[in-house]
Image (cartoon, rainbow, N blue to C red; front, side, top):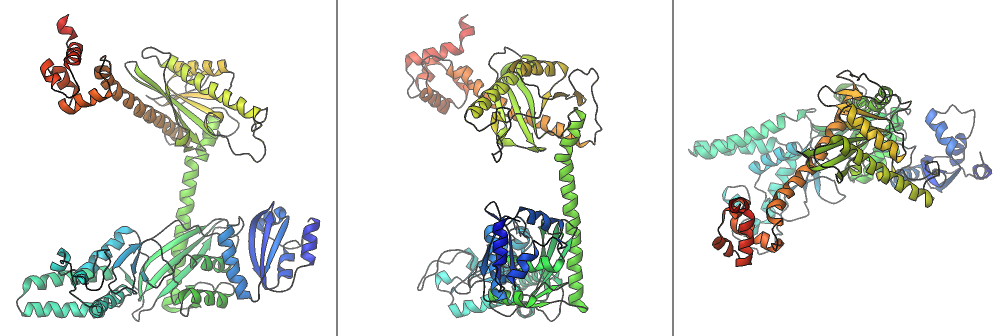
Length: 631
């Protein structure tokens, strides 16, 4: 502990507030305390039984700041705001990149409509959801449009408007406020029914539809009765897909937290109007060493600080610390009372157990996905390093392929994988300049020479500028190299032993020694320098799958570029080689004749009919396409 820390700890007050732990000027942790002196000093007592994460954090702290508050509630709110602003490394951070769709009704308007939105704003509109995916919310919108004649257009409605009603009004799907066919009071009644329906109070709507259907059938309006029957069926089908939880209705958010000792997973289940309408899960990296109540205490404040409105009742398996203060904060964001409850038995307890079960399942699936992802990337790099005789996993792997058609328009492609993942910004194409015909060996030699020569030039420039050490290492704190200056740790050549030999000769000629190997496409044999026998890896080997992905990507990237050049060459060989025929005349000829074949078959008189083509140019074009006939 440095002298600055000792002095600051001695001067700490005993009042509530927040503390901001720093390392080299960066805020790495934000916390709150009822008594700042007691709480902050605890971090620096060697006798304290800290977790591994806390010990790692404390070892980095070289300074801290405090913000005093009048009450613990103020400290709680301030802590949430500071965490959201600074995103400290050692805090639990809610990284919510999932924007589920909601339905929004702006009840402050005279003629509101039902809108699909991705974020809940702090306005006076009513929001319903979230819905699990766009398909689900569009299904709800389709049912609503069949049940309630609200407008779907976004045009502003002004007093005294008298436009011609659209087709939706003629079909009975809109009250046509733009045509003055309804009043704000009549429209508001329909909006109220929509709000009730989306809130789970659907009985009155279904009764009204049943009565209308029976009346239509009684009056022998069977087509209308059938339409109403279908609407009732759609509404009931939608409601049945929302699991009934509580016959008395009510809104609840059910939260559960599980951990694996490293990360934590929080599950949020939404119940609206007594029906379960959906669930979300959130992975909290590095929060696995904290208890579920501690995690939920920080999660709740961040989760409902993004415009989300909490339900009137929030259920948890274990109440978080300072539950009353948190409930007070949530009530302020809801604009009404919010109760945090820890049910011990009954339906609500079963709901919490269901959330725990879902959280556990989500955590297991996430870990399995991460394990699979590691196996395909970093794990595959480690396995590949062992196969090609390296003592470490290659970070940057470059793959090379040559593409041509009977030796024409040859290109060399370079693709890059960093830590086992494709890095498209690092891809490069080399147009072969010095090789005539289909010669993969010489082409690989040229490509490798040009790539590594550029690397040497770039690195020498960086050394001269002081951005790279003389031994090729980066100065401390520097950004990683990119582009040609970033040398590969391993190089994959698409081909066999001869392609590998020529590429290695080029590498040695430039003055580098980089692990290099080749992959033959037919049997996926791996060839290593100075080893006569090829290597066959298990078909399920992650290393083989990584090599195949790089090889296939190099082939795809090269073929794409080669096709582009080949397409340009096909036009070049016929029009661009004709003397005196520039871009404007070429465009005019193609616009007139539609194809090269038609231009070649045209007579001199037909060519003269093209705007901008005179007799002299027409004779030149005709002669170009009839050379063989003249011979």
